[in-house]
Image (cartoon, rainbow, N blue to C red; front, top):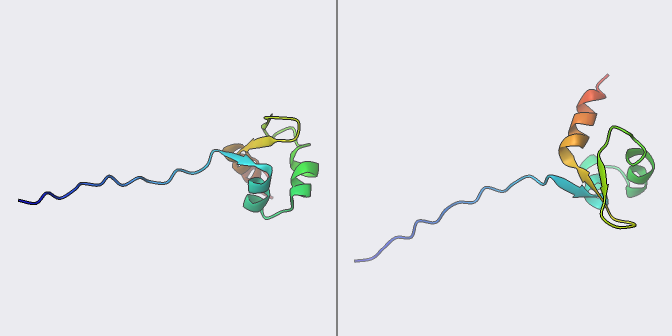
Length: 70
């Protein structure tokens, strides 16, 4: 008598936190643009992990884009 295995499927999760490089790719802009324009925007939540490492909340970025609609 053979047994069949029931394998659970794992659904991929969307990333909540993005690095500077990931955010630049997500927005389709350069890393320099992120540093000069996104980092200086007071509406964006930015967390500094070290002297040069920042992480950005993806949902906060999406909300900023939605609120900037003309």
